[in-house]
Amino acid sequence: MTQSRFLRSARITAAGLAVGALLLTGCSATANKPAGSSSSSANQNALLTIPREDMGTFIRNFNPFAPTVNPMVQQSIYESLLIFNPAKGDTTPWLATEWNVAKDGKSITFTLRDGVKWSDGKPLVAEDVAYTFQLQKKIKGGFDYLKAVTPEGTNKVTFTFNTPWSPALYDVGQLTILPKHIWSALKDPEKDTNAKPVGTGPYTEVDNFQAQSFVLKKNPNYWQPEKQKIAGIKMLAFAGNDGANLAAANGDVDWAPQFIPNIEKTFVSKDKEHRNYWFPPTGAMINWQLNTAKAPFNDPKVRKALSMAVDRDQVTKIGMSGYAQPADCTGLSGNYDSWKNPAVKDNCTWTKLNVEEANKLLDEAGYAKGADGKRTLKDGKPFEFKISVGASSSDWLSVANVISQNLQAVGVTAKVDSPDWAAVVAGYEQGTFDSGIVWSANDPSPYKYFNTSMGSATVKPVGTKTFDNYHRFGDPKADALLKEFVAAGDEAKQKDIAYKLQEEYNDVAPLVPLFSGPEWGAYNDTRFTGWPTQDNAYATLSVRAPTTVLVLTTLEPRK
Image (cartoon, rainbow, N blue to C red; front, side, top):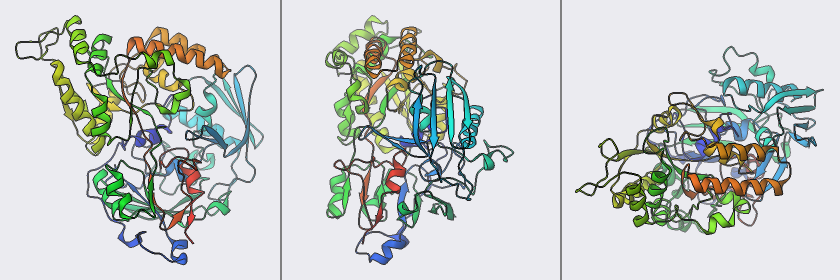
């Protein structure tokens, strides 16, 4: 994807990065507490209660283009043409019932589902889809390969590309669709707060909006009324994991999608009959990004040396409570196990702890150790820099602290910098940061991961805002392979090209991959049943993924 599309905001929050998070004290949902016995009638009227651990307060803004957009905008209010489920690797038709990819790979035609209405009662039509992409490109850019989006009557829409573009199906298919009759009437669609959103999703009606909680009630015109079995959704604001975790431990929430340390003891043990969790390794690769626009990070030897100084076993055990899998030299998360090049994976060097080799590489690169054991840059200044992580993400702060301690063994000083996420993300987007812990693209094929880690087209100059490739690295060899990938319609050929991309990634180390991000998710089924599990993986337990709507339309009150 060019992740600059507004689906990007879902990915940002997936890593705990709500850009406008304010550090205020979280609240407790004692008035709607799910713990303990509940009668069937009470459950029928109960609100599905979910914490948001990285927003200490809510602002009434339901604009999907806004950096501080509220939760559930892209999961419950607006919907997409299709939904890809990484837990099973399958695709569910949603607002579209079918699609046809042209033989030359230069277009896709979607057929819209009959009978879908917006929450104001007006029908969903092909013009809505076309307008959504026009607006997206105008406000956020991206979709450079997209030549035109053409409505064909009211129920078909064709996407035409400048060149064959095999990743387009999920790129365009998972963008949430907006109603043209609402958005075309706005004076400034980018800045309008969209306080009373009109969507096609199951829960669209904003109710009881407060600074630390709000409710979404049923869409009165939903196209699947038989699947609106819960009364509504209640979101709670918390300024960090700790407050959200306490609410989960106390039974104040039904769905806990945040990082919970020692979850068996702190959450499950309090009610083993009703509490469970599932952390599939299908999340994004979590990378330590080094700003290659700055020396010495523009030197691949330095990047590999710093990577070899990191003890990923410590990172995953201490920072991630043992929930995550250490990365390898392919750079690919557990979402792409079938795409991994065995030769790269099995002969991996620079993602394994090797302090001796790390010191050797830094010596060779010309960053000498002084008598005090600390290294200096080539201009004589100390080899020191910052690792930027938002203050509310306790897990990633632990990861950054482990890295900081590890680097002492190679004479490098890294200081953990932890302002709020708004400041951190601004540094990433403008290219002013030194380094940071960052999520990655995570779509059905690995194309977007490699495009945003090595594609020259995603590189922006320092000072120019970007939503991709914060580390600002481009590689001509990767560019040529990426061009081949998008033109390849056959998955076997795509895998062959992906193998070569991994070889190039292994050579140039554009990023320092740390671990495959688990998709966090825990639940308390005292009041609601039908949750996804490892044995029933119809969706993940994330509340910020395309599959979230599958959960919202499956859960039902406990009888």
